[in-house]
Length: 297
Image (cartoon, helix red, strand yellow):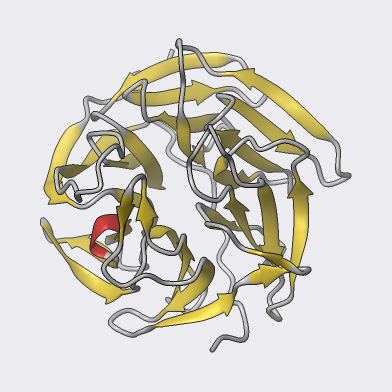
């Protein structure tokens, strides 16, 4: 059994923090959806890194230090951004303006990109579950963008499952969690899809995901108020209690940074009670890839 460190609160007063990534200097960048911005935690303080409009859902650092953003258009539950945007993948230079890269894939207009990650093949993979609405769900997709900017469909789900957190394993397998079903699934490079099972709890609403150095998955659960630690075969090893509604996480060595919305998105008023936590995970995270995507307007 892994001896996880006690979570430490590092920052608070955040507007739905999500989708963290690491800059080369070790600073933590994350989105604040309610503030329509990318923020950076550095030297014990949080500051704006870039404005995106809409509601950014996640970000990842590229090979040249640029950031790629899942832009859902401007929604967090019933809330709407003061300046709405178009659902898209954006590229942002620190301190610069957001450039739109992709708004549709193979004729399919994006509904609300959610999480993204680079694979070792240089492709940028992202989930597009649309708006969270179990009663009237949008179609569910996983897409990828090649380095030259060409997008393609990776998975077109027969039924809406709200694919959310996303990771790419060393062999190129794409792994994701599903907010509607509570399941974690994997798509092998040959196209075969495996069900790793439903996470524990009466109503797990899964959000973010990262891979540990030993191959285990770290899956955040908004309702469970913590992180499921899952073996590659789907066996759940542990549950780490952290925050009130943890949205996603990122490894920095043996430190796991966790973004926490603290409450569910049930109001049309922005909640600025979000938090940033860190805890120790012996062994740390798996190696990550970084690429660059051409194009933009």
